[in-house]
Image (cartoon, rainbow, N blue to C red; front, top):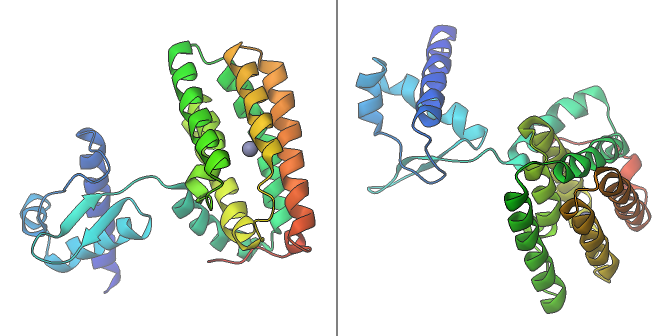
Length: 242
Ligand SMILES: [Zn+2]
């Protein structure tokens, strides 16, 4: 690939992204066929493929091979953003503790904003769903997958009313989870997490922003300190891209 075809690919990638946003495409929806893109965007096959690969790297598009394959809408996954961010953090020489401190700064603010979210019906509904997921997890004591583990926190992010803050929090959290929590032995699945979540949810439901912020601040401190101890100094390591 030469520079000009890479540039063409970026232009096409922007058009595909615009197409996804304009039509409010949901995750899993099929995009137009490669040949249709070639004529729609007046481009060669190589450029269209490169454009799709650019988006695939970011998880915004998934490509499936075969007769029923094609390009499908992906999602703005914090895991993908986190992967990309670790690339930059490694270059900066940042440590996992730097990442944890950012989570500690931003997380409580999201709880406070969620408490002030004017859409009370949505707040109640999403907190109920998160509580349900927490219950299943602790009652069945299944080996928790990370989406589940983060369910309560992701709920707060989605309720804070600012998609940028929400994505940033979810992203730094996914780095901590994927790089540290996943490789820490899961002995005693910490039932106090459950009751912390309940108290925070109550504060948010009752619209008490300062209390929600304070409780989430303490909760994150406890969780992060727990893993600081459990991970045998892993937090002071420099962030590695992976
Ligand atoms: Zn929690």
